Length: 389
Image (cartoon, rainbow, N blue to C red; front, side, top):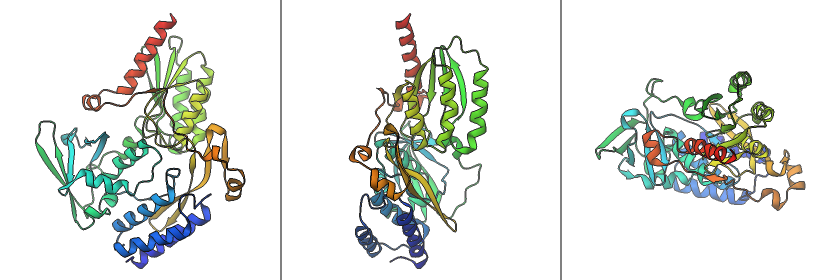
């Protein structure tokens, strides 16, 4: 059964999806969508925002497949906790008094069960995307209270095993409103120290972790400052795009122009599982400039659907992909007609990025506050320089 309010909300989203998406039935057809809808409302009650979030996310996953992670229902209610995932271990990143503790269960339900139910609602084309979305889901109250195992509860009880073996429990009520002081800095969590730089030995390390428009002035000022620096003793520019989930890809040009002006330097690009959307354009630009890529696979196939077209219905926001891009082939389609006429198997065959040197962040390094990937890149730069001397 579905409440009339949420039925209307769903219908507005689907009409928008059919009208806007450049290739709406690339995974399932409309008849299969309707069958899926009927099946779901016969086995679950969609009566609040939590069950609706699960309902829509479950459907969107099957609409999107592996090639569209821009179509989504965006709603976030932060819990004052977040995590990092290393293989099968989920470690607390915040708050500090639980940091490095291992998440065992929620409401006495084994965390493996929770993860399986969350994965059932997450579209992803790479393992990195799955990991990143799982980490975000674990602090999203709306997401957690919507999954089958937790839907009937009024509070969430996280059980954490601390490094000393002691078990701690932390409770979050469905109706509690958390203050800014209780919550973590979400912008810091997402973007880190964007548009900042530092020097280590012979390396310039530049953080390019977001191209959201709100960072435009900061990016411009950072590059202007860099232009006034003495780089005569610098032989390597390390561009750290880790965490860059996109924004306006035109902002990549400011950095790329600076690198072109310093074409006597070697370029290293650091990647991780969060790089997505416009962040992958920075990656492609750097590869085209001769960068050696070091780090992890990213959060998206290089070619995919994108360019979010937003639908606002009251307090709710839906995003639908209205374009298709393959930057490696310099291809873009911005209309249904263009896509249908020009698309080929070569264009849409998923291209999964693999770094030149695969370096995974180590759990032990994370616990000790060591940056595995950056440290490797700095040592790699030294080795290259020694060979050239």
